[in-house]
Image (tube, rainbow, N blue to C red):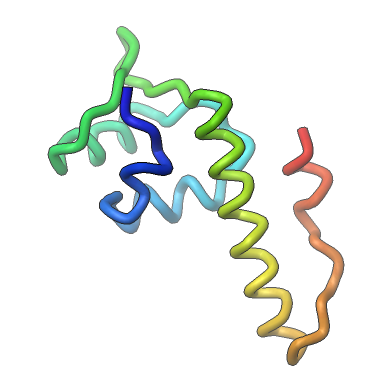
Length: 92
């Protein structure tokens, strides 16, 4: 099975954006999975066309979100780090 971390740089920007906006999700919805497989990438999907993330995928996606939040935090505060507003949700 292909890992999201392996194909991350080749993912459609819409899929990457969805993944970063939904870091606690354990399933990639059919519409997003179709965008990935339609671009020639392999994803194992269930009978509903959804892709279930592995624990490694979930860890990777949460780390990407934390990195994105850290970048936005330092940019918006002129270099000072503000508390991560998503920290509690990402720990779940």
